[in-house]
Image (tube, rainbow, N blue to C red):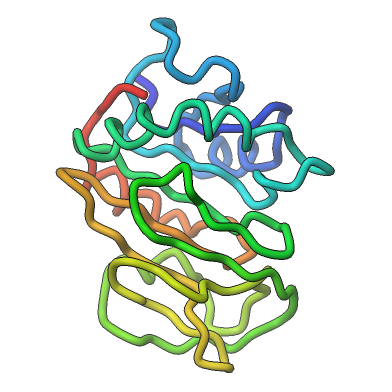
Length: 186
């Protein structure tokens, strides 16, 4: 059974990253969201740039499938979503408040509160593509301007992890995420 779903409309380097670290991942075309052919997943990942039409056509599928994404999280799935890579984005397809502002560059990270979710960042000096100007849940990491770049939002039996960190998640984070989520349908 595949534990990780990667939502995108073309092949990505993410797939190679997962294979190199021994994780089983399935690329999900956005148009197939909600079809009976998708297996259940523990972790659904939506990479950076999902809302930017220069990179992907994923956003329209997210908007159409917002209730399926909410059900996935409520039933114990974990959603890892990255920055929109647009000037701003309201994540209205999520069942929580989350607002993003784009600003790409290197940052120094500092913890705002303790959480295993911070395993996502492998270092304290990383690239970020923006920050969250408004977010429900726990703000986990801040950039050097005291802006939120990693958020943990518990929702139902599952969780939403939102980040603007412009790096692959660490293998330690992936292992943690798989241990703290359950298979759910999308």
